[in-house]
Image 1 (cartoon, rainbow, N blue to C red):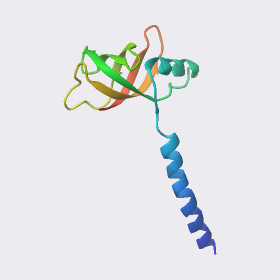
Image 2: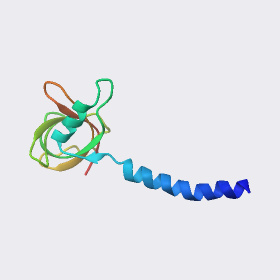
Image 3: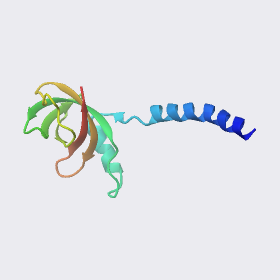
Image 4: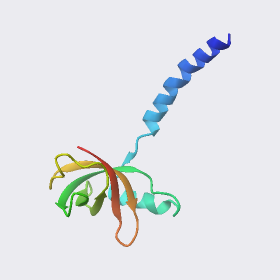
Length: 116
């Protein structure tokens, strides 16, 4: 009897857990200005929420320091500390970056992953 109960609960709750993780576990895709707002509303002891920003690379200061613009045209700096891009970042190409904003005198986006 208890075995049937456990199997029944597993059949119900495992797909429900997978759906919940898929639906609410993805980081939001936002503009840089929206990411700054999210960073300023979090407390100082918390890291800003992880978000995805679609950005066009305008210029490359180094492999880890990029000047970009988002979909709204806002220019900002990305400090990339993730695994290296095997082909290198290319100017005037659009990438998706996962990371968080560091708010301060000159806010910048700290990216840890990239996607094409």
